[in-house]
Length: 247
Image (tube, rainbow, N blue to C red):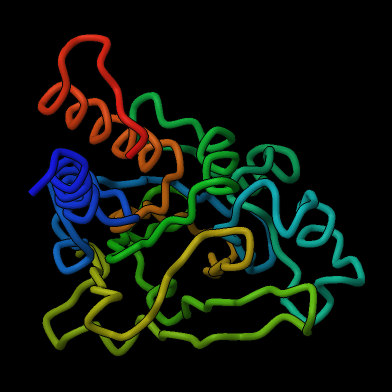
């Protein structure tokens, strides 16, 4: 076997073991996506008099800013319920405002929304606690849905499906308990990308703490880093300093 063949085989082995997707927690492939240990946490407080739809979506959607489309009900999103992005500023005046606050240290919601614009992200599990706006535990939000949408410039917004939380409450559940839903087991693709969004409703005068488990991510910068690292390792293994080949 000549040197050029050996170099190509080494590089192929290094890169083929990596895959396109990125995972936290040392997970190597999508089979372990539920075990990354990575989370996104929010508190959504709805002090208004009406139920509010919250969209988990990137700040850039299909090449544009989706804020006007979701909040103002503009023409391009008219077949989706009117609602608010998780990353927008407070709506209304305290104490009757709608607010979304990040609960993870140093995890800014505007940065997250920008990040989702370039890094499609999978949510594998969602855990929730529901309270009245004054902090007293309640469970009416567990009767709501999580709904996914697929957006395309070639067709109207497509509702991918809904999952009602009430079916996951057992006979022993009380308003003080956390409700956890494994979205993978339920065959619900909770994706956030420039074409994928999902929505949740927060009832009037209630608030929820929401913990989302992050699974697979399609990170071009991390893929770029892995590919460059594999190439550099291969060069050091097969070539003397400064040596190269047209492989």
